[in-house]
Length: 200
Length: 200
DNA sequence: CTACCTTTGTGAAGAATTTCACAAGCTCCG
DNA sequence: CGGAGCTTGTGAAATTCTTCACAAAGGTAG
Image 1 (cartoon, each protein chain N blue to C red):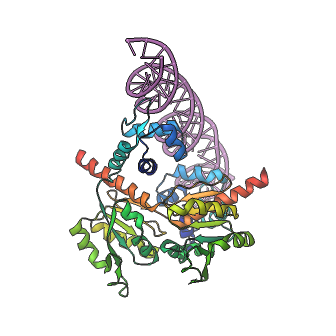
Image 2: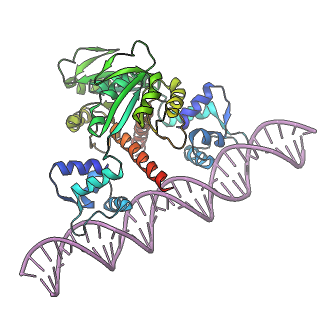
Image 3: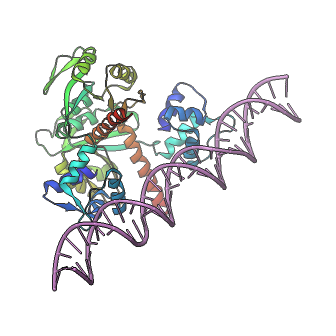
């Protein structure tokens, strides 16, 4: 989050940013900003604040964003299509090197810069290209077996959009985005807001 | 999360579930499960565990999921298309009642059960139908002005897929899903894992 | 009915996180 | 150069979150 705002400030030409300013932008407190950043090192100058451009570079290095990451998309449905065309990925240094599905009608279709391939080819491709990250956009009932296959193929991190609980070995990183669950969080907030209103 | 697993257990016909069992499913601890659930009430039976079906109903009520929520999708791009067709929403009680865009070429196109409408019509529609939730799937540079307009129209909760920081008044709930940021989290995990390997 | 097994609900202890507060350091200005 | 004005970095305090541990309660078997 800090990186996102620092990049903004950087492109706007701002030289330095105080913990106060960053806190306001990020909706947190100055002390929190300083504690967070101090965990990784001492980047600021007293009396001045943090050097925007330099701190940006530091954070990018900390996050491992100085390199390009190869990504495969598993599942050529609607969500897969949206993700494959999502500019944000490329902009942030994630290059989609392949899209895979098991539907014969989809295999062979050109999708932007890549062509939908048979998922059976994924293991070889991942091994050859040393692709570490997979984005999972498949129906939830197929999720776990597919996960097992791509993990066996050498995938080391998975961004999961299937609304299913999946398990991975400890050496694999997993992040799940469950859109229905996000909406349910909003439902809870709305329901509680109504209650709060009726109470006070 | 508890709800998701309890629903699974319920459809599998399981009558009761202990905090131990739920903890294993959810990847947490029995004490955590009991503390979490006890926050909302005393649902379990000592010696037996929690009644699966009853607790499911309780949680759905707590989350405000006993009713149907109307949802509008703002932005008829790729992500909007994926979301409009996303079965998970309907399955979980969120009904997409409208899709809006400002691109004349998109307006009027039929999208599943609804037709893409001019975003200028959104305020009236939202006011008439009392639609509380909007899903935002538009480019980030247009995000804030559109947010201001739909908030003024009466939207009370926003699920934001634009990779931009947006601000809302306190009475509006906001959840942001930033896919690039999720990938950056994986990048950090991978970078650290490599470091950890090279260290130990 | 009683003894025993299981599991919840919850105060208390422990751990982690956040906030406070201030010394130390940098810049600017006269 | 020296004092005034900011801002960081960080121990310590405060708060929040998690885990522990056990009394209370339901079930079961005999």
